[in-house]
Amino acid sequence: MSTEIFPFALWLEGTNQNSIPANDNALRNEVLAKAAIDIADAEPSESDVDDGDVYIVGTPWGGFSSDDVVIYRGGTWYAFAPFDGWIKRRNDTGDLVVYEGSSGWAAILQPAGSSLVEVNNQTGASYTLALSDSGKVVRATNAGEITITVPANASAAFPTGSTVAIRQAGVGQVVLAWPSDVAVNVPDGLDAAAARMGSTIMLHKVDADEWDLTGDLLAIASS
Image (cartoon, rainbow, N blue to C red; front, side, top):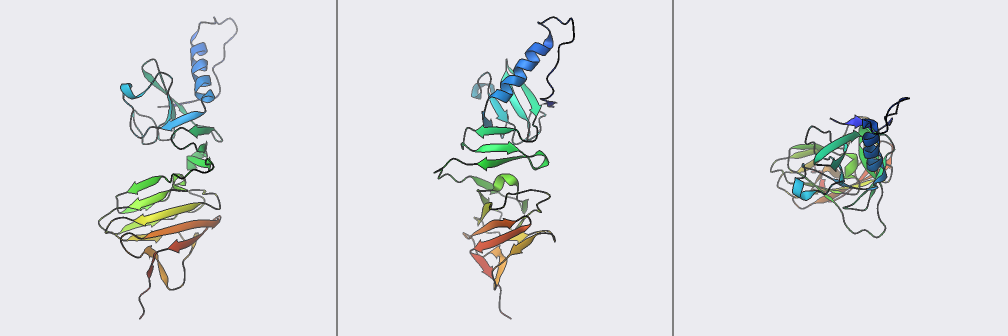
């Protein structure tokens, strides 16, 4: 479990300086001060980490939640709950990411000239787009149909201008779905589904709950 990073522990009048709050506050300061951070999608082994390494948990492990920030110190992991507006830089991509409460961590600035596009592999029969998918390729490899849901802004507040690429890399057809309060603009004569194995379709957010859909889309069969 994580603890709140604020407020710092306070010394009460008459408390000795070698009391516990001194070490606790030093640890919190270290987590706050380190701008560079990695994502740990599985618990790093002791041989993979150095004393003082800081991570966003990613896939939950060790009893920590996915958005927690953890630090490895003296052979122990310490976890802190993120707060709204906390900004860090990712070591692997160079992105600046910000914690946006229930929406989690989201990239707010990517390095100029970056040519790397992250891939989010999805093998299941359904998936709902997350804020972290902005600027990524969601690659679907299910053998059967896979439904990818475009969430409402109230559930995942993608910034206007966000783009998500979706590739049907498996036999199963990619079909898009969205709630009634979301508008997805599909070109005339085409369906909100990938045309074939190997097709890539693109979602471009143009308003709070409105997306444009382009790419290799399935043609609606004529009657």
